[in-house]
Image (cartoon, rainbow, N blue to C red; front, side, top):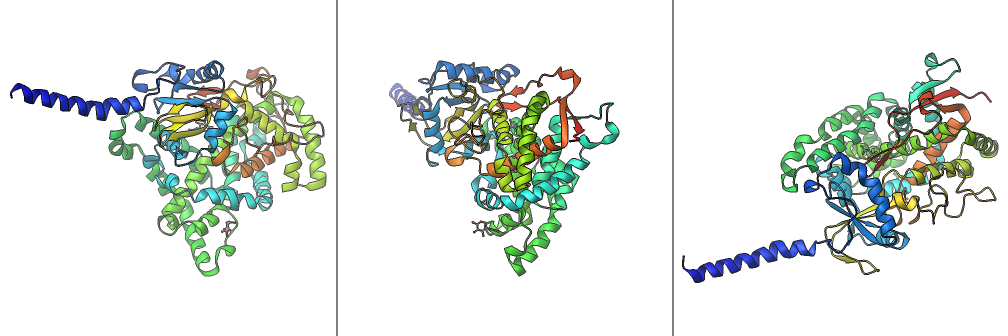
Length: 502
Ligand SMILES: *[C@@H]1O[C@H](CO)[C@@H](O)[C@H](O)[C@H]1NC(C)=O
Ligand SMILES: *[C@@H]1O[C@H](CO)[C@@H](O)[C@H](O)[C@H]1NC(C)=O
C-alpha cells in the first residue's frame, strides 16, 4: 500500500473512532458531577464498597446540599444522587418519556431472565392494586383480621411448649414476620385455602432471594453476554412449575365461573381482579396469571416483612411505648371495632410505623430513575442519556432541618396536640421529605393496603402479647445490617412473645 492511501485510511479510522467511541463517551461523561466514594475495579462490588454506601450517601448529602453528586453503585457503575426537596420533586414528577421508572429495577433484578419481561412491559397490575385493592379496604380488613388470628395462633411465637419460666417464647424476628405476612397478605391475593398452604407461602417468600442471587450473578458479566448466560441462572421455571401445581386448579375453576357468571361471581381477591382485568393473550393463561401472582408477592412480602420487623424491634426494645398504644387501641375498638374507620383512628400506631420507616427507610435511595434522553434539571445540571438518577432517602430522613433530633426514635413524632396525625404526615402521606413509599408519579400503589395490614398487625401484637428482646441484646435494639443500598433489620435478632393478660 502506498502512503496517501495509508493517510486516508488512518484519517477515516480516527474519524470513526471519534464519532462512535470518543464522542459518545464524552456525551455520557459525568465528569462535571462531583464524585463521592471510590470506583472499584470495573465497577464490580467489593465487600468494602457494599459496606461504604451508607457513609458515602451521608457525605454526599452534606457536601452537596440541594445539589447532585455521583457515587459508584453496582450494577450501574455510577448513580447520580439528587439531594434536597426541589430536586427530588422534579425527579419524582419528571415525565416517563425522559426518565424510566422501570429500567433501574429491570437491571437490578435482570427481569428479562429472572421473572420475565412482562412485569415491566405491561403494568396492568398497577391500576388493579391502586383502585380495586385500595377500594376494597373496608371489606379486606375483616379478612385480614380473620387470617391474622389464625396465622398467629399457629405461628411458632405461640408455641406454648417452648415457653420459658416467665411464659415467653423466643422466635427469630424476621423469619417469623415473613411467615405471618406471607399468609396474611395472600388471603387478599389468592384467598383461602391457598394462603394457608405452607409450600405456597414459603416459595413466595424466598422467590425474591433467588431472583436477586441470579441477577447479581448475571450482572457480574458484561451486557452482551446476558442473553447467553441469563437463562442458565434463572430460577423462573422452577417457581412457575410449583405455582402452576398449587394454584393451577383454582385458576381453572375460577376461569369457568368467570366465563359463565362474570366477575361478580368470583371471590373478592387479587387473583380474581387479575383474571378479569388482564389483557387477552398470555396474561390470561395459567402461566401469565401464576407469574403475575409470584411477582406481586415478590413486591409485597419482602418489603412488608422488612418494614414490619424494623418496627417490631423498636416495640421489643421500648416497652414504655406499649401503654399509650394499648390505651388508644382499646378506645378505638370500643367505638369502631376492627374496621377501616378504626384503623384510621389508630393514630399512635400509625405514627409508630411511620417513625420506624423514617429511621429505617428500607433502601438508602428512593425515586430510582434512568434517563432515556439528555436532561437538564431546573438548576441547570446536565444529565446525559443513560444515567441512573436517584434521591437520597436515607440522608433526607436523617436531616435535622426536617426532623429535629433525627437519630432519636420518637414514635409520636407525627401526632399533633389534638391527638390526630399531623397534616400530610399519616403513614401513607408521601412527600419529598418522606420517601418510604416513593413520591410523585410512581408512588407505591399498594401503600394503603400495606399500611392497613401493618397497622392491624402491630395493633394485634400490642393488644395480645407482651414483647421483649432476648437477653443477648441487653435491652438495645439489635443494629441494622447495611449492604449496598439495602437497610435490613438484624437477621439474627430474636424477639420474645408472651400472651398478654389484661
Ligand atoms: C376494578 O376497578 C375498575 C375501576 O374502578 C372497575 O372498572 C373494574 O370493574 C374492577 N374490576 C373488578 C374485577 O372488580
Ligand atoms: C428485601 O427488601 C428490602 C427492603 O426493600 C431490600 O432492602 C432488600 O434488598 C430486599 N431483599 C431482596 C433479596 O431483594
